Image: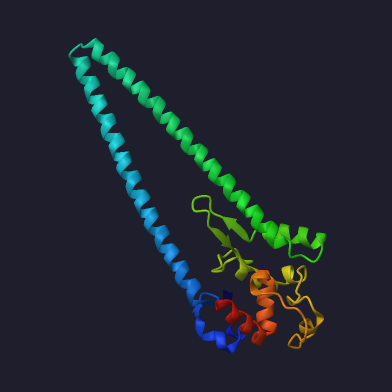
Length: 238
């Protein structure tokens, strides 16, 4: 969970957050995120090493084939020349197929990333107060949501285009702070009864469990009813 200020959290939760660029992140999420970054970096290094090795192998094979061809021509060995030419032609066909396959993989990755991006935008847009608001939110989100085709990683951006260190739930909280989004979004406490929504402890009202709340509802509930939120949070950990 990411928050701009520790004041947005119940006091009992503040020691579980550490300062990051632009706000505060809970320690567990930050540790998991760092681990994932490390794994991605290691995978990128291994991939680059493998690709470089394969490139060198191809170059050596091409040089050897060219050397054999030149030697056969010097010796007027027509049969060997024809055989090597056929081998080179086969290599060219194989290379063309590999390049076409790589291009197809890139196109598929781009389509997959675009589909994921559309799904995320649709999910976030659904928080609008009505159809018109949802359409407006969808249009506004075009500049705020990016999905990397290479890693399938979701990147949320602020109004200036800078990447935010937040997940989907954290970005919903950011949206509620942006006037262009907040005026279009539903901002209600996650209670089915009127008691808690009116500001008391809920009385006999039925309160959703945390697992039933949307990210927006959970963020609002934690801010508006910190004591009740802690009760739900502790009961969920048991």
